[in-house]
Length: 207
Image (cartoon, rainbow, N blue to C red; front, top):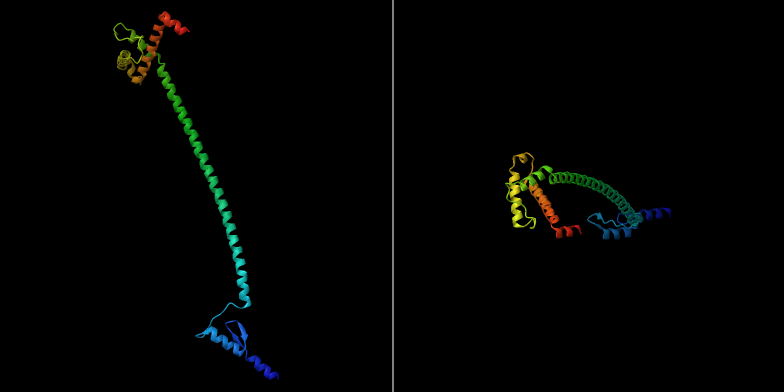
């Protein structure tokens, strides 16, 4: 009896398809179905493989979550670095703009001071007064007319032309506009004196 049982056990054969020992009939049935040209078609039916399949999605999710977390940290650090760099560049630009504005302010102040000195140049003012009131000059401002009247504009042009050709001003670095300003200023003096010489206009001026 024991020998017959051992013989029956020996009849079981290993099936590469299901990775298990099968009876003789089961083995050949599987061989017909899953073995072609001497090559077994292995199916993922064993418990171990099923366990791997069942555990793979969970593992993949953990790996994906870890990757997303790491990427999020990297993006946060990158955004912080960009923000710091942007602030640094913005501070530098603001500093450059402040210095440029200061330089422009200083330049404007210098030019303004030069212009004011030219406007109040006593040498030019005296030369305009002497030329205007000289006996040889027949072109004098008419205080009854405005400065922009054709006649008074002719007087201004004449005075400017004579003064700009004067040797005493050639080395002063002056231009025609400096003489024009001085002539207009002197016209205001002539016009004001004329008004004060008229009783009615003088009263209006005092009121």
